[in-house]
Length: 320
Image (cartoon, rainbow, N blue to C red):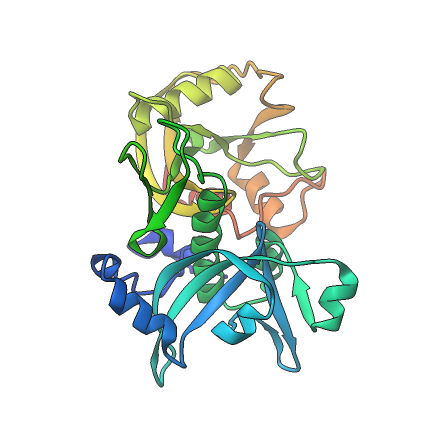
């Protein structure tokens, strides 16, 4: 995924996992016969997940995540089956499903079946599949993760059953309906003229600095969440907040909301529980970080992350 010289009108399209070409057909999920017909068609395909990890066929042309239903059935029992949408491949329109399977993923078994089990982050980071396929895999991962952890009703504790092609779970005991969740996360670039604020967490690779981020809380606007998180983590008060772009982030089910915040003061007070360090960077330093020429070997997050796009757009003078 390459950034263009100028950000397009919809900057979100440049973020990882955003390129998802599926026609979700949300209006037809409750049509049981229609969905069953798509699944029964010979062109139907499904992604297979063992836990949180997608299974991939190892073919001469590379890795292939698309299984026929008979191929997927041979992998093991399906704990969940969800309808993702309809995919046009140039010659036909096929139904695409996500399947959570019970299977042995030991190296010996995978080798015997000519399969690979590779976590989605690695697939995306290394560009092992087309961006459009990675986006659809992210959709499947989020939805199947939700199913695996919501088998019982949080209202009464009874077992729930999947309905609406896997986009809802119903409780027969208390009639409660439960829907897949998406967790909003603000991720923001703090600016002060020709400098921007970046921080690093202890879990980051050595030398990497990124935008600050945090979950949106109940009863809070995006702007309020941005200002609160910046103040909590770096002690910086901010004023005007503007939205820039968003990114689906299937780890497990977040939506990253990229924003730019204008600093009111510049005196950093790092919350050591949240950050290892935070500092101001000039545009010149940011350029060196992208070019891998920073004298301290500092660098920005990979292009997979919306933080990369935020910092890059600011360095080019397109935001902030």
